[in-house]
Image 1 (cartoon, helix red, strand yellow):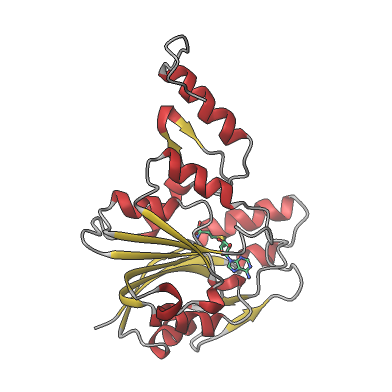
Image 2 (tube, rainbow, N blue to C red):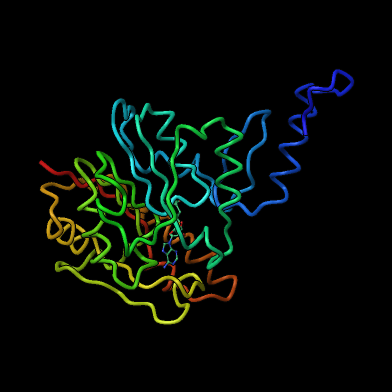
Length: 259
Ligand SMILES: C[S@@+](CC[C@H](N)C(=O)[O-])C[C@H]1O[C@@H](n2cnc3c(N)ncnc32)[C@H](O)[C@@H]1O
């Protein structure tokens, strides 16, 4: 650790080495740029994902709730966009049920100097409410969470109850050519080999459900393009996995607003 001892070399090289060694000892889902040019080796390349979310450039004066924050990339990004109050909420990846660790979130937050700027709360999505969180939030991020839930509609309603203005929903989607609302269910580990994946809805179903839980308007800002689904399905087929599973799965981002 860096020290005040004048005999200790506290040059940025040492600090960077220290950050790098601590990063290497932790599990990472997000790729977070830390001081000294260290980036956490996340399985998700967030810099590539974030443009799809079409987030407002400025969150100035807004409060932000990040549901399923995991390592905290989008909570830290909310501070960068000027949010006044940011709450990172999670449980599954923080309490040992998954392969993640809250230590990673805490290390990144501390290293970025955001201890006083990003609050955290261990809470399951099924328990979210204004009472449980101590209030409502202007912007609610529900990114990559909905398809993990056994009761996605109940949690969508809870997220809506906590939201004053804008919900950013990023999730799995399928069957978008159907002209009626539809869902696909994944028992076992059928979706991406992950037993915590349960549902894909088509866009009409997601829009209908968002209206059902209290949002007055929605805008679909991103759909995973057909050519990328095709390319991914071919790649999976070469690896011996079913073509159809990847071809019929896509991601979608919807902005849902109140008022
Ligand atoms: C795919 S990660 C998405 C993380 C982050 N929001 C993002 O978009 O990068 C799923 C998140 O949902 C949370 N989660 C909540 N309930 C879950 C459950 N029952 N099963 C799996 N993950 C769950 C996880 O802890 C994790 O933070």
